[in-house]
Image (tube, rainbow, N blue to C red):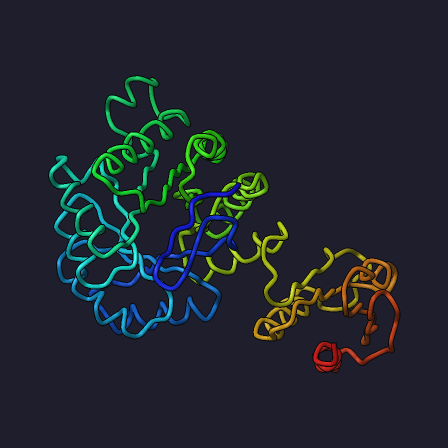
Length: 346
């Protein structure tokens, strides 16, 4: 779906531009050195936009130094205190994330909007299922997709009436299908870019599954301009998961995709270890290829036909396969080296 084009620092979203990956630092923003190091690592891994919490004035002031040493746009995450939003803007934030409903009176929201307008930086209007206003909860008898949409659009209208339309919308819930329904509804009612994610998705396993299901359904419908996979863990895992979700949906081509078969009773090689070694080996190779790691020679050549290059394990040796054709047998302890050499030839 074509949405309004919005600039965030040196990036552009909306209007059919590529979907960008966002993550959030878990360092103390005031710890400038640690925060910069984490952002640089996330950027190297493929993060396009980074968000930092701004819980106090020290964190807001730290943004100035952080900005000097990173290459991706920085979003300041603000709750409750409108003065922190203004301070974050003054110290170089490329976008601010607020929930106007918890910022306070209209005058406070107006002050934030005026500061953003002066520097022409976007405001992300963020509404979560855990922060819906009491009248909305009473109207819909609890948290619903309709309530999320109504709350977000009411707050958007408030900012529009203050004369500002440089906006991004985010509506999130930990209930996957509620989140899907809310995005389907709001996409029909607004042209503002949407930041998509399943909030409080959980730990690495649960969070990845819930995010893949929810984001997969939403993105497949053409909804969403930026995404975040919210995980209880290392933010690097969020970026890896987001990349794989986009790649699986055909929305991004970046790096080598490794496919591997499940183990079975025919497996005579350490397939699990081998697949992990291959994935680690290729992570920094800047080629768009599919690499197959198969556990036996029975189905390996056939299953690897769709891959550009692959290996199939045997007893003490393996087959090196290209486009389903066997190139040669290779001793097990030389499989990784032989595979890498063939990858570099492609």
